[in-house]
Amino acid sequence: SHNLDWRQALSVEKVRHNVELRGIGKKSQLTVGVLQVELGILPEVPSGLIPSQGVERQVEQEARQRSESTRLAFSAVDRWWEYYRQVHRRFEKRVVKLLAQTENRVFLPVTSFLAPIRGGRHLRTPFHAARFVSLIAVEKVSYMRAKQEDAELSLWHSFPVIFAKRTASVEEHALLLCSFLLGFCLDAYVCLGVSADGFSHAWVITRDALPHGGHQVTFWESLTGEHYPMESEQVSKRYKIVHCAFNHNCFHALACIDERLDRIHFDFEDQTVWHPLSPEVSRLPFLKLYESSTTGHPGAHVLSDGGADLPLRMLPAHEHRVEVHEVETSIESNMIQAVAAHRQAVLGADTVWDTSMGYVLGTALASFEFERTVGRGYGEDVFAQMLRSLCGNSETVQILPVQFNHLRCSAYLPHILQSPMGRSIVEAGQTGHRVALALRCQVVFYPEAVCGVWLVVAVRQMLPRVDSSVIR
Image (cartoon, rainbow, N blue to C red; front, side):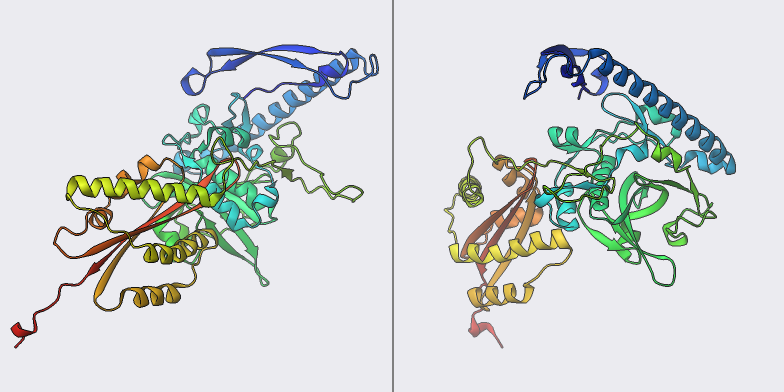
C-alpha cells in the first residue's frame, strides 16, 4: 500500500504525483512499477481559499508530532522490555511482542494494529464476524517470532490490504477478529502464546465481568470461528501457554513463572500475574492505523467511542452478477460430471443419482453452516428421521460433508478423494451391490469476495440379502 496525502489539492487546482509501487516480501525495497496520479477536489475549491503555506505548515506540524509520538513510544517500550527481561531469565524467550511493522515498513506498537471495527449490516453479529474471518485463507508463512529482537521480521498488514490479498497470517486473523469483537463492544484481547502442538499461535479472548469479582473468559479461535468457555476441555486441547494479551487500549505480559493456562487467570488488574505496559503508549496521537468515525444519521447526535467504520464491499461471485442458487447449481452440475467421469474411468460403471436424497442433504448443510456460525447446530433429529423414511432398514447411507473457501470446482473432487471415506463414497459399488449417489452444495457469500462453500457427497447402498436357507 502507499500513503498519499491529498491535502495539497486544497491549494492548487491539480496535483500530480508519481507513486513508486514496491514489491512484497523480500522485494519490498524494490520498485516494481510507477503509478501516475492526478488529484483534484470536487466540487472545486475556489483559488486562494486555502493558501499552500497553510497546508504545508499543517503537514509539517503533523510530521513533527508523529515523530515525537514515535520517539516516546519506542522509549517506553525499550524501558519496559529491559525491566521485563530481567525479572526472570525465561521471560526473554516468551512470545511477547511489543512492536510490529506495517506493509509500509513503519514500526508501531502492537496496540496500534487494533481498533473497534464495525462491519456494518453485512456482519450482524459477533458470530458472523468470526465466521467471516475464519473463511479468509491462511498464509503458510507466519511473521511472528518468539524473540523480541526478531521484531524487524514481524509484518502485520492493515485490514484493507488483507482484503485486497484475500489471505492473512495467523496473527492477522486474530487482529481482525479482535477488532470486530471490540466493535460489538466486547472486552476483547489478542493473545500470543503457544498452541497445544507446540507452535507459536495467536487467538482472541473476551471477558465478561462477574458480579462478585473475576471474569468469565471465552476463547475465540480466529482460524475456525469457534468459541469456547475457558473451562471447556477444547481450550486445553488447542492452547497450551499464553504469554501476552493486548487490545487497542492496553498491553499485558504474563508476570508469573508458571505460564500454563490452567494455572493463571485473565484478571489483568492483578499485577502479580500480569505486567502492564504504560497505557500512555496506546494513547499517543498519530500512531493509530485506523481513524475514529463519528458517522451517524443526518441530524443525529453521535457519540464517538473510538471505533472505526470499515466499508466492507459485497462483491459479485463472478465477473457477471449471478444469484447464489445459480452458483450452487453450477457447482453441483460440475461435480456430477466429474464424479461420473471418475467412476467410469475407475469402475467402468455408470452412476445413478438420487435427487430426493440430494434435496434432503440440504437440511444438513444448513445446519452445518449455522453451527460454524453460532456454535451449535439444529434439526439433527429431523434429519435422521428424513433419512430413515427415505432409506428404510434395508439400506445403509454414508455421508461426507466438506468445506471450501473458494469457488474453484476443479479442486473439489481431488480433495474429496484424499479422504478414505470420500473415496469409498465416490467409488462405491465395487462389491456389486446396488448403489445411488447424491450430492448437495450450499454457498454463503461474505463481504470482500469471501465465501464459504459446503459440499456434501453421500452414497445409498442396499444391504446384501441373507439367504434364510443357511440360517440354522
